[in-house]
Structures are given as C-alpha cells and as structure tokens.
Length: 141
Image (cartoon, rainbow, N blue to C red):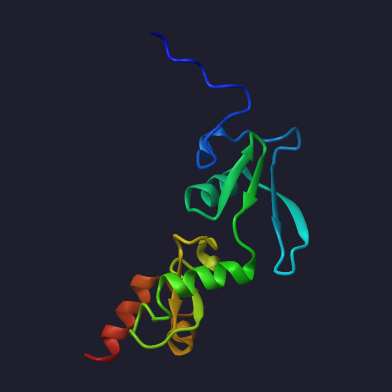
C-alpha cells in the first residue's frame, strides 16, 4: 500500500528547510511584544532557518515564521531552565548571556542563551564561552 502524499499546506513547524523567500527575497517573521501587541519584520532566509533550528521560532508557512517567545517570556524560560544558577560560577544568576555573543554572530535562541550572574556576564562581555573560561583559568594560575 502506498503512503498518502502530505496534504497541501501541511508541514512540520520545526522544519526550516520548508522555508522559501518571498519575491522581496526575505522571510516574514512575526511575534508579540511583552504587552501582547503584534509585530512583524522581514529577515534573511539564513537567520529564519537558524531561529527555527535553535527553537526560537516555528514555520507558519513557506515564507513566514513566528517567534515563540516575547522578551519577558524568553527571559523566564532561560532563567527557569537553568534554575536561576550562573552557568559560569554556580551562584545565583538573573541575567541572560549569549554563549556566542551577538557581536560575533550569535542569536537570541534557547540554544545560545544561558543564565549568568551579573558579575560573570559583565566580565565575559563580548567573548565567547571558551575565551571567557580561559581568562578565568589565567587569573587563578
């Protein structure tokens, strides 16, 4: 018995390969602000695919993705996931740090963000995790 082909318009919301750009050459991204207001912007296909693969967005249709979290929801997600514990020193943490800094091409996704205490977040600055850990080791040698 042959399997039925997928119905038109059905897709896996986590399948970034399903995306195709619009005539303008972009993917439409939509979401909601912390107060529930809807927004949208156009993003490049590569960024849209990263956001979907790293769990920050889902595919709505071939040319649209939806951000899964408002800023406030995302912050709560990361801090709760990491139990409000700094991933660097193990102390109480209440800030979000990008493992690969945004300045170096990192994105705000659950995959790239971790809980950090204020001091570690400030000391790490725009370094990636390996550079920061290496600097900590140098301090104690």
